[in-house]
Image (tube, rainbow, N blue to C red):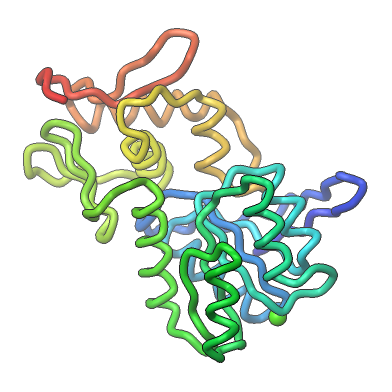
Length: 251
Ligand code: CA
């Protein structure tokens, strides 16, 4: 389920094995799990993938550092006790060099002073092991929501509503059934409000790293979304990308 990336030389090893994005359309964004305990890493990756995230994994600090500097993530789950480079040092380095991705620390170090160190080191939230996966998922949703400046779990564009918590999409109250990739595309566009999002950016965010990426498929997803939504909520900005707009002319 997780792939391995070779660090140091900057060379990547890709596995052709497909992963994640099984079915459940529950989320939309791309996350990195940094955890050296193989079983726990697999469990986290599976839970996140089942919830709909595109998931990459790293099992040491150097690999995590390599990935965070080369791939766009919407959130990171970071263990503190890691081989090669410990999580706290890594986090401080990221924050010192402007890496602003939301970070949720997952660690067995449950004592209060270590939590304080983690938060002071730049973590956005903290969960001590053992934890319930439901709590981790809820915290990840909240982190991403806060990072987007959203107080509520619903995004709207005119009559179109996307509920982050339930992954429901509706137009004028009528539910719309979407595939996981269609949902990811719509969710990413809605999370970015009226900003124009390029096909390349969309492609990077809707697939995990070992997926074969093809930006042409984004066009296919957008075409299907337009059909299903029944109104021109997604505008094509020629030569640039896509953005959400309210077809009724509102904000
Ligand atoms: Ca560890």
